[in-house]
Image (cartoon, rainbow over all chains, first blue to last red; front, side):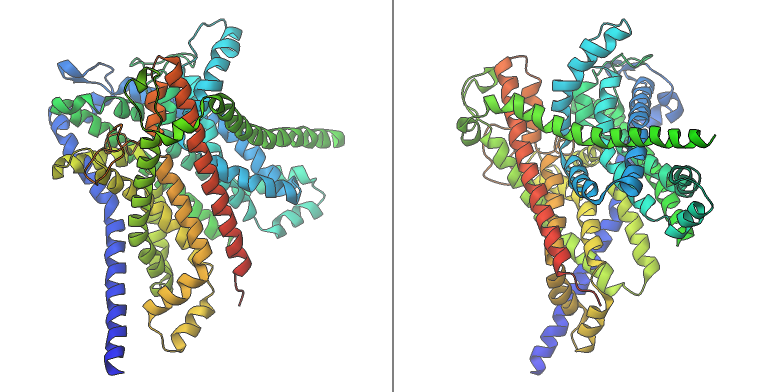
Length: 300
Length: 285
C-alpha cells in the first residue's frame, strides 16, 4: 500500500514536470523563431541598413542588390484590397446572423464558416486558377479596356478575401453577441427602429471589436502564401494598378528558397523577408488582441 | 423622414441577405468547381499507384506517394503536438485554474502564435534543419508542422477544457486524487469528444498546409520508408503538377485537389460530429 502511494505521487510529479516542460517549449517558441530568423539576416543587415533595403526596388540577387520595395508594396496592395472586399461582406453578414437571421440560417452558416476555414490554401489557389483568373481576364478587365492574363493583384485579393472571410466573420459574430441586450432594449424603447439601433448603438459599441477583427484579418492575409502565389503573377516590379501582376513577400520566400542556398547573402535576404513578415504579423496580432481584450473588459 | 428610415433598413437588409448568401455560394462554387474539373480525371489508378516513369509528361501512375506522405506527415505531427499540447492545456485548466491572470497571459500568447504565417515556420524549420545538418526529410517536415499546429491544438483544447465545470475539479480533489490524476482521469474523460475535435482540427491544418513543408520535406516519387527520407505531400503535389504546361498533368492536379478536398471534408464532418457529442454530454453544475 505504501509503495503504491509513492508510485502515485511520483507519477503525479512526472506528469507535472512534463506539463511545465511542454509549456516552456511553447512559450519560448516565438522568441526562438524571432532570434533564429534575426541571426540569419544579420549577414545582410551588416552590409546595408534596413531602411535602404525597404526603400529600394532594385532586386538583383546575383549582383547583391536586395531591394524589398516592390514586394512590400505588392503585399500591401493585396492585403488592403482583400480586406476592402472581405470587410464589408463580413460586417453585413455578421449583423445579419446576429440580429436578423432565423435560427436555421445560423445552423447552416456555422458549418459553412467552419468548412471554408478548413479548406487548404492550395485548394483556394486551384479554385482561383479555375474560376477567378478567367473571370478577371475575360469579364472584368475588358470592362476597363485592359488586356490581361488574369494573374493579377485583383485576382490574388479576391482569393485572399474568400480565405480571410471565415476568420474575420467568426470573430465578428462573437463581438456582436457580446453586446448586452439591455443596451439594445433601451434604444428600442426610446423609439429607434431596429436598424437605427444597430447603426447607432450596436456598431458603435462593437467598434473596437470590429477594428480588431479587421486587424486579425490583415495579419492573416499578409502571411498567406501558396494560394496567392498561384494566382498573383509574380513579377518583381512595383505594381501601379490592380490589373497588374504582383509579387508579395511570402511568394518571394516560397519561390526562391531552392536556388538561394548557394549564395549566403540571398539566403540572408529571404530570411530577412521572413523576419519582416513575422514582425508585421505579430504587431498586428498584438494590437488587435489587446483591443479585443479591452473591449471585452468594458462590456463585462 | 419617417419613411426614409425604413427604406434605409430595407436596403441594408437586402445587402445583408445578399452577402450571407454570397458566402454560401462561394463555398459551393469552390467545391463544385474542384469536383467538376477534377472528377473526370480521378481514377483508381490515381489513388493506388505511385508515379511511374514519364508521369510528369502525362504517362501513367498516381499520387499514392503524396497521399501516404501527407498522412505520415500529419499523423506524425499531430501525435507529437498532442504529446506536448495536451499536458499544456490540462496544466492551464487544472493546475493554474486559480491564477486567472497567468492563464489569460498564456492564452494571449497562444493567440499571437496562432497567427504566425506557416511560411515563417517553414523558413525557420529550414534554418534549423541546415543548422542541425539534416536534409529535407519526413522528420524535418514533422518537426516544422508540429511547431505550426501546437498553438492551434492547445488553444482548441483549452476552449474545450474551459467548459469543464469547476465543481468537478473540487469533487475530484476532495476525494483525494492528485491534480494530475484529476487532469488525466477526470478532465480527459469528460472532455474527450471535444478533445477529439481539437485534434482533428489540427490534423486538418497539418494535412492542408503547403508553405511550411515546401522547404523541409522535399519531394519524391517513392513512399518513404524511414524518417530521414524526403517525402511528397498532397498540397505540394497539386502545386507542382499544376505548374506543368502539359494538360494531362494539370488535369491530374485537379484530381489530386479532389482527393485533398474530400479528405478535408471528411475531417470537418467528423470534427462536427464529435463536437456535437461533447455538447450532449456536457454537465451543468
